[in-house]
Length: 576
Image (cartoon, rainbow, N blue to C red; front, side, top):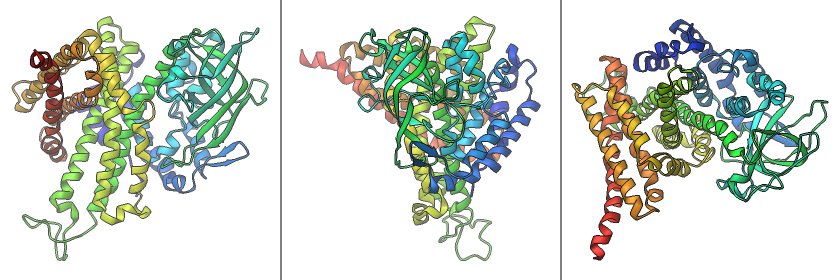
């Protein structure tokens, strides 16, 4: 079966759980935004994704991209589907009307890309960086660059890439060697090679805009010497720039997306932002990309769950323990959906999907508040939320996207391991999301070492207090969440104190700490879902599964970090 978006579930999260519409309509650009417009956009997006994007998923995986004489040919149907995507205005959903966009809230774009990732991850990789490139150019590009490129990127007429990685410089961008030599006319000549460039070459658009991290001749060593240069595939006179695709990678998954080795040979480009300040300009793009990767994890897990749930409602095996299920009838075996072991898998993964959606959509809402809010304190709180929560979501959602998809494959038994049912493709496609846009280990270090500890945990405490204040202590579930949030605040203080004695400790416990944060926030999300559901049976099973099968990990991870801190603080006394 093809993936099908479910707008009703998303609208429940946006409206009943998050109260999105009044929060958005309070922002000046969205004063006319209402639930009717939201429903219209979501229904249109669901129809487009389900009817145009999803049917190409399997053939895109089996046929894949083809590389011939320096050119990449995308799988059959991809080009037409992408043109329909552009003509429908979907790339421009959240871009400014001044740039040809529709000026809608970022959360609707977030939902769109989550659904597209679930439907066809390979094709979704092509426009996946458009929003980030648009924001990067809008904030840091010169007037001339904006006039030439901004509307083309905003509308998706031209696609964009982010060229960071080199063979010797993966996560360590300070080792980048690609050179940019300034020219008398204000342009730069870019030379060097980049690897792992998603959509570096393809036949979807006439031009491709490469944002290339490079180093000028007078640049200091390390990351502080990097600059960002815009290098188009085609120049204004319609001649080919010195940009060449040398090959595409043969990958575990994502066969529908071309992952390219790119060579820049005296290619003409223009500086984005200030010299040697490329990382600052790039991170506008990177932060947007990381939220979208988190949503990929949610979309892929939803795709896996849909396949597993549908299979479990058709496949009969043995007798289920317990009371006779109504679905038994005269059949000799029961549906595997009636077996507790299978029910546990399905309900637990459903819990991760819906809980993570609450956090992901809240983050997208905060992006709009940070950008458009009138109140300075509200903007500051929104920026703090995004800084803290984005690395948490990127790491946790992509990890669950892969591990949860593997769990869903288990529902199929041996049938899941063969291609016929399509679940194995989801597992393969999901794996890379734990690696790109900053590995999950780097996300954990970014959270704890760069975001939490520098101010002694003050920003993290602010986020947790904000969540605490949205709960009702008179409800047992909410009171339990408040207790966990308090435990996390205390744990943060313990790590900060222990780090003074052992500076490497935060790097050791960062993964466990991030997991504690995600589980505490998921508990908050499910407390909000439970209250909004008001007894609706659709949500009761995943809610119970989260508390029974997922939330106990909170205590385990909390204990692991606490013991690591205690070992450090106890060491001097033991020595004495």
